[in-house]
Length: 214
Image 1 (cartoon, rainbow, N blue to C red):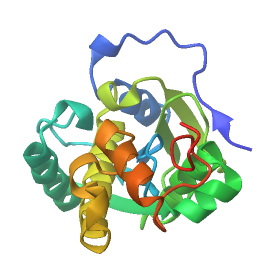
Image 2: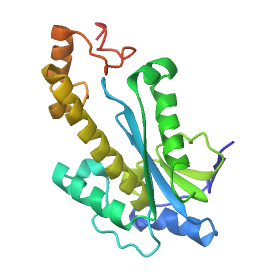
Image 3: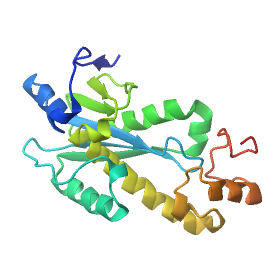
Image 4: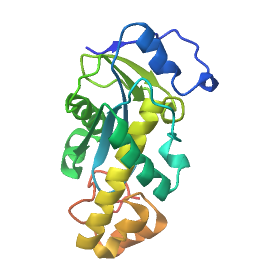
């Protein structure tokens, strides 16, 4: 079973984006991987997770919550992260599997697979949110972790850039849904396209708004 770390801490997010990593490093739990997923709330496309191990001596380089960055900034930082990271891994769970096991389990599975695919296995992981990854590695869940941990933020950037590019590729295969614009999220225009054309093979059939119930 996953083992939670320093559950009783009272860490203030203003103490620094390397604070959680430093605690683990001081405990001898190194390397540390940050883990995050994107696409959980989408109506189409896979859920994507990334795991990133940053070097101890990395200066922040503008790494922060991917939602605070422009697309260009994310792309530039994703390339930087891949260049300097000790290890980076991405995993995805496809819509059919999401429909089969539900989006929460699919998100956790994607994060597990991302961690297991790292070329260097971490001794601890920092996970965005409040759900532990089903893996036997000491871990700490961090609410709003993509804005409180540099490692989680790096994972959020890598996952977001990967998924956005994938949805842009899907837009070539299914141009009527405008995936290049909304990336599969449930925007008004996306829902209208579903009503007009019905769901396509990458839509999540179990999601409200895809099969005519929202």
